[in-house]
Image 1: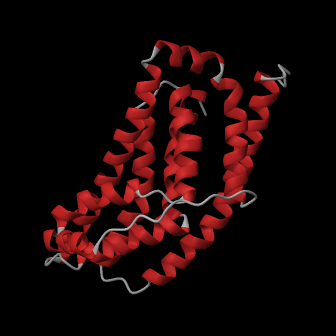
Image 2: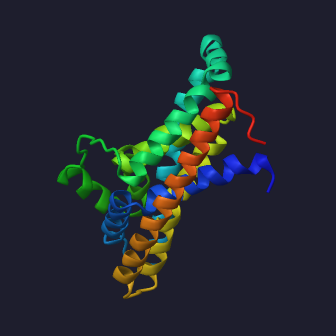
Length: 231
């Protein structure tokens, strides 16, 4: 595997891991289920899922671009990224890994949509799915906040990629949404079974990802702070 593809795969995987984490996954399923109740034709359910996913992707692209591009375009910040970023990236990755393992934790204020707003989305059907995706993407859970700000943003800054990596991350967050939209549109009755299977997969995926982040973080610390040549 070429080293240039690692950031791309990592960004996509961070998005997938975000989407299958309990809090984002539950909100995604609830949002899609809620929206499809306002869709008259079953054939339009997949379109609704795509619109919702596009809303999430758009939110992450805009937010990632605003943060990454603004920092990269400031000369002082750009110099900071080149000299200091490699040194702080290791500790950031280790802290993110510790959070994914549950060793450390933090809480975010609850953000929810009022009944009036959700009612408008329901009446809007497919058209309401896009703004709902935007809002749900910006309603960060602790896991999504850790992966987005602790992993994706440093990755975007390090690789000077304020658009492509956030796009892949957003795409990853939308894949399970499309899966459940397809299940709903096909009238599948095993949605709860699929949900439980994904939840179990997420547990081990989160642990393995945390281990990788910690290992990479240790590598960055040894090579960029202590200047130890491991290879």
